[in-house]
Amino acid sequence: MLITLSLCMIVKNEEKHLGRVLASAAPAADEIIIADTGSSDRTKDIARAWGARVFDVPWNDSFSDARNFSFSKASMDYCMWLDADDFLPPDSCRALMDLKETMPPQTHIVMLPYACGMEENGTPSLIYYRERIIKNHAGFIWCGPVHECIAPRGNIIYGSAVIEHHPQAGRDHTMRNLGIYEKAIKNGADLGPRDHFYYARELMAAGRFEAAIPRFIQVIYTPQAWKENRIEACKNLAECFLAQQQTGEALEALFKSFAFDTPRAEILCLLGDIFREMEDYPQAIYWYRRALECKEDPKSGAFIQKDCYGYYPCVCLCLCCHACNDLENAWRYHKKSGQWHTDTPEYLHNEAYFQTLP
Image (tube, rainbow, N blue to C red; front, side, top):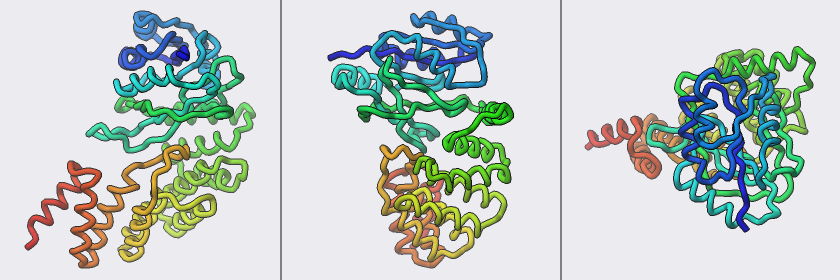
């Protein structure tokens, strides 16, 4: 059974990017819905050129309201959301079209991988699954003023079509997002655990570590908070402490994450970094080796830093073993790092160094 798909987007002044994302996704869409929140450039003209239905939506400091509006205008079986600075590679577009032909009609949510932080060679440094395709008229509602989400429920499947995120260089939404959160708080909004988590992350991104710390602690000690947010909050809390040279507190925060699930490579690598910075190389080696034992679980919903599961701990183990005069293992870990990358500055520097040795 071939399902139909509405591509739903909210935009404002995106003339530089909108054509690219629509060109990449339009072949898979049966309908394009554009909710424009106040563009003063050619955004709406570009959208109409792609056959989109364009609606003007007054901006009220709520991304959820705008997304819910865009979904309300959809007439197809399912709604798919994208941002203007997203991109659907050709292979992903084909996978999406195949999915439309094979997807069970009782499906409620399709989770698709979201690739962010793209490296120069085109590989993502961060990848996680998002609720990307949602059954229309099934009672799903976007929640949260910023970093909005739909709580997945019902019949959920995982697809292979990767959505790439390519934010414009120099464009930083931190202050905008902070303003939205702080206005909501001033107006008496009751932030839930997820919003507390993302508010803390925005505070951290703005360098307001003292303000972020109690917010992260609140998330960590809130049983109703999602497990992955609590684990990530431990890592982010440690990063705030490290920014303030509070190493002991950072270590405590990282070890606290072990209470929520088996250790994650991202946490273990940061532990290794702390001990390497302290020149406690045996401890650093221990934690980097534990990181190499971890397996990625992209369906967990966590922020997966792919290099923490191979390349990065190998490079750091090379450095630590070299510092311990263990050249044999330093060389071994250097060669192992090449299983993931052979074109990075670190790899090339180490390769040149080892070539000088007898």
